[in-house]
Length: 499
Image (cartoon, rainbow, N blue to C red; front, side, top):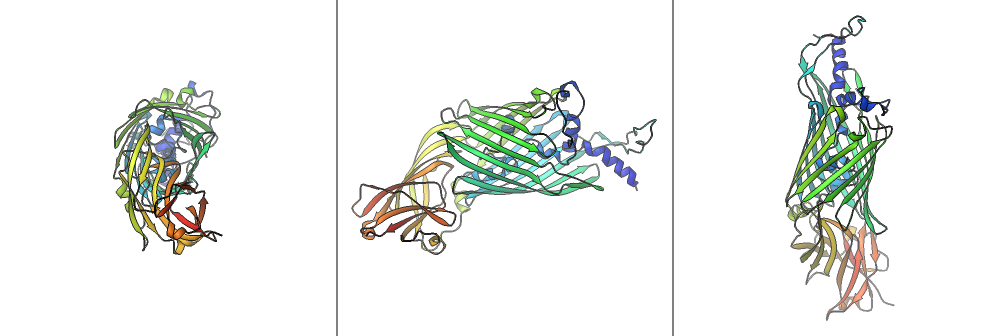
């Protein structure tokens, strides 16, 4: 049996070589490129530092400014709230990082739509070769010869499995969370822990532009214990802002990151679609007190090629004298509207289904998808027509489905006093990511309206919010009104009796 001192010496020698700790040891090594940079006093103090390595070639090419970019297949890593923007299709993504000094990383992701949101899985695997020298450390106290002789070779790997869910809420924001299990292996020693990631996204308009703001905190957990000592996880705070330019389809992204074991850093990234299938990307990360491997180590660039359901991405990052990193990812989308509808709750008793014939008009094309103006009409439903702009990955649907019924039970809670409830609607699945408000044209039976005034509403939490309704040219048996409202789980029609 190995002595306790031998075990402790081996772990003390091997731990800096495991996964991300090896990276920190290399980054802290002396050299001409590092003289201008200051090393954080807590550098190398955390375990599982591989959790800070960028995931996804698209994000890596943009410098990692990705906390405020929704809908990416690797959103479970950057900001779990981005899972809420998964869209109507399922997605499988694979990422390979050919890192410097023979290190490697793989990441496998899966995301799918769910009721008013989405969920996803992620598997992060970081590894070294099995050619690390094993040294016992028994000679460390010998002033004449403090270096122990090698005693064979060993390898190390890190593994993290994540499961997350996010939900969109009225008011154009989303909240998400992911739970991860982390395992580290150094030779024949093992460490296991769990952690939590939290995130939020908010879409908003400002000075004529559409923006997305994002916040996330990653790796909230107790740390990993090796032998007799527990090492903290690398807690990372991210805050970002992104904007998609209407004319060119370019994506601009800014982000500030604060790891618990490093200084604050700022990143700017850009994605520019040359065509509907080819996009170029670049980014730059600047760390306060200097980049560890020199100014060029903050630069990154890459490109992506998109097909109907398949996307290939590449990213390049230089690391000075340590070498370069080449990262590749591929993403496959499958399924569609049927999968999204299957994830919704069953219709309530007393509701009827109506189909809306869709007339799509493509507006702009970018690497993120196609922006459509969707016009949909129904000859029988109380909502006669609707129009909205949405960003879709893939083709526009040929039909929309809506359920119509009478407000009852929970749907009557929060109904404004003095209004007579007439109808309530729920759309089974609205395709893509809706940009701005939706325009509705709805019918009010003349026999039911009498002298009353129609009020159109949308559901916000447990309350109904009324929006202005403008009268249109009437049909023989119906009054027609138009109204605009944001995307919501339910819409309703009420009648305010006349005086």
